[in-house]
Length: 113
Length: 112
Image (cartoon, rainbow over all chains, first blue to last red; front, side, top):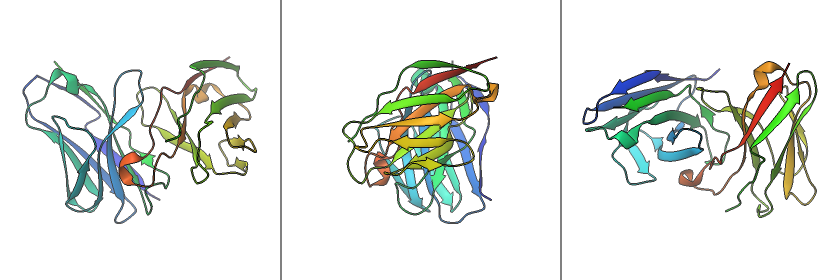
């Protein structure tokens, strides 16, 4: 069966510091991968998606970037965090067509102080 | 793009059926209805999805009206662990960047 992992689970970072969040998927190959952000009490906002190694598409202009160095690894980064980057970051995957069911990881809660 | 409306909150007694409604009056013919739930501080969990016919799996049943303008998620015997925010989602496009727009959902509280 497939599993998706994210780490760290929780992170507290000062403003202006760098960020690296990691997501890995097991039990499948060539998945579509997604990064979402969820602000407190709100729905999910799609940040990035990737349909293959080195292929990244961004949905909204922002302070963050994403990379996919390996087939089942998706990384969310920032060179300098802003207060507004605080939130709950979720990685998701699916296979095949974009409308196929997405499966989410456990999330990383980021607090920027 | 079809949008969904859900009640912000609902209560249900433990052991009883929980019926969560969703309106999607502008849904297109090729758009599916998906349901996810999110327990506090966890990632969303897939529950069920459907196009036209009613669907059932080990977690829930999905009833879609004949005109497809609304649907109901049914948890047949709600437990305390079913307390979560439930999201009704219509697939909003056929490209990767328009997937799964999550609204505020329904906060279901299962009461002992």
